[in-house]
Image (cartoon, rainbow over all chains, first blue to last red; front, top):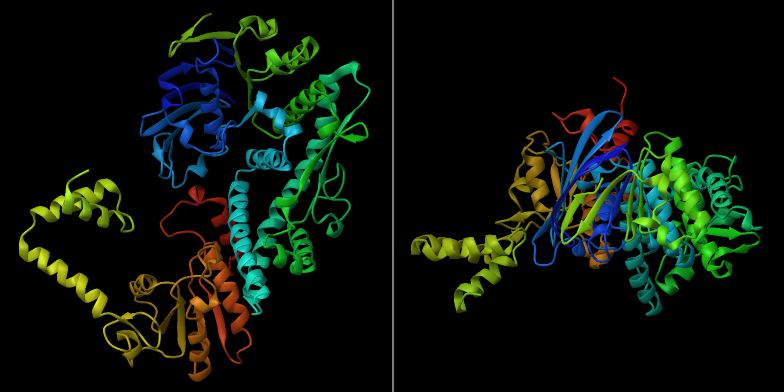
Length: 386
Length: 198
């Protein structure tokens, strides 16, 4: 698939912009602060309904404007679909597909699939476990859009259950019984949604792991003796089947996982009441990144961390590519951060992509394989530069 | 900002559900231009809704008397009770003209984030109502969202111990007059798992 057109109105720094892309490499070149990243961010937003830079929607709207509009035309196997998103501050966003409104913005997920690699991705290796959980969940939604619903249902039940644990725990300490009966109900719902989410994550890690090993070996090449691996570390690992989440192992059964979650919640109930938070479940899990024998976090050098982050994105790209419509690859300002061999390796993969969108401050940073279509971004305008 | 009373009115209207600042302003200026008699009628209605409306002793629906119109109606089947969250849900089901039983309004759903537990809902009243009267079926018609589902599950746990009582839950699935292809995955999954032999 490829993005044929991008139009934005009042998005980030852009009052208005209209770009026509072609398949293959498209490079946006411009000095710092001209809004290159904002343009690829808009494409990422159309694919994921979220930004890779911030957690909230408010910064998407140009300062002083009421709402931002992102319109993209996506061509998938010869068929063109347009997605139009209206981001309004303080109100629900609206979405249209081919000019027809859809009930919920969530319904546009899956039309455009992107894999975006940006300097922020260093946090995948060095940041909190939450960054890696988000990486997995975002990838799940790209793989099967219905997980967007599972994820938000899980988060909602989790918030409710935490509120109940807090109030029941306080009531118990004060000597009364609290709402233990309703806690059972929330346990059940958390296990149902959590079972689906966790089972899907386990399967995802099992499928992704071989791609990560290959991608890291490719990126880091012969100058490293350590090989990379990923493993899913669950907060209820003791209750799970050992074959789950392992390449070549069993596919995780959501109902079996839900039962395991229920058992784990029962075992940690008094502790949960004491602390007032849910202590087991997918929200406490971690995607372990291993380099040689040691965890990547804390042990990897700066260059190794970069390679690992890049390997995770490339693995995601290869996984999605192997499973259907080829995603659009977006490389935001990354060539300047890479050394020569990593640049070359990344260029090899990117050159084979159906479409790759690249931003760079200096045109010379982009390897010659990725010449493609060039756009010059300056003074609030985008010009085609050959 | 407008001066004095006009801005006060806009602020008050803006606190109502579903009324934004622009709508509040429109309504305020409409009221400003309205006939005094119309204003008096509105004032009267607002006064009455606070003073004259009570909640039915039996089902908890809004009512003018101690028991509501539906609970007084002898033609309605007292053995079937439909449990809903809000009085407006009673109205929604009444519009179908299909249900001939009676209602029980919970006054909300389990929502720990807002501090609403079983004690804040009319659940105890429901249990004693089932214990005291000859009720054979309870239909759970709470909303099909996180909180409504949790409330339904909780009620199922409480009600399954009553001998001879059938507990049912409203079916969830595809809307009538819709297209299958436009249904979201969750709705379709629910419709599939709730399919029935024909």
